[in-house]
Amino acid sequence: MKRLLLLFLLSPIALEAQQFHLIGNADEMGNGCIMLTPDLPYAEGIAYSRQKLDLTRNFQIDFDIFLGDKNEGADGITFVVHDDVRSFNAFGSWGECMGYGRFSPGSGGNSIDPSIAIEFDTYQNRFQNDPSSDHVAYLENGINQHLSYWNNQDEGFDLEDDYLHSFQFQWEAESQTIRVYLDGNEVYKGNRDLVNDIFNGNSDVIWGFTASTGRKHNLQYFCLKRLAMEFELEDLDKAE
Ligand SMILES: [Ca+2]
Ligand SMILES: [Ca+2]
Ligand SMILES: [Ca+2]
Image (cartoon, rainbow, N blue to C red; front, side, top):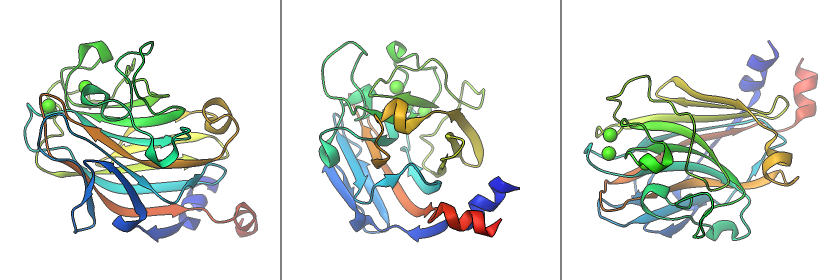
């Protein structure tokens, strides 16, 4: 019962495009959506909320993502939470790194670190262990390679279908649980002490979205829905 109660007590906050700091090709679209990349090669765009997240509290973020209208396009979007020293100007590499990571774990090049990310990958790069289908994966510290992924067990799974897809990210602070939903399906669930194991004890972190294209490309954007943040842990205890 406690978990249900927590979600009901979250306070939703309406998000506006002006609350985001934009880098590279990112640009307001004027309809509550922010473009990350135009449908052009070698583009990269990043949008960070100016309001940081507090990992000592529960929160839930809802938004829609658009990954393009052609299956042969690329490369995808990541949702990122980070504490990189470059703060609101942190960026990663283009192409298969989706503006988040670097090309290989041991290589140089720009990546957002320390961080976690959820990637929505629309192009197969064998070096990153990508399946032939589009997929979702959990990433850490600017490394795009992943051992596991979610593609609905469908080798034809395609997100570049000219539709918006709903995405939800939930953080439950006490149990240190991450839950991710795409179009209502649970696509990732994991337990991680983010504050201590990723962010070196810091609980105030930057969040936003990154995307890039390479030789192949697509229009990629996200639309704001809401951020729901738990206000006071004490209030929850009283409510019980
Ligand atoms: Ca593709
Ligand atoms: Ca890829
Ligand atoms: Ca695809």
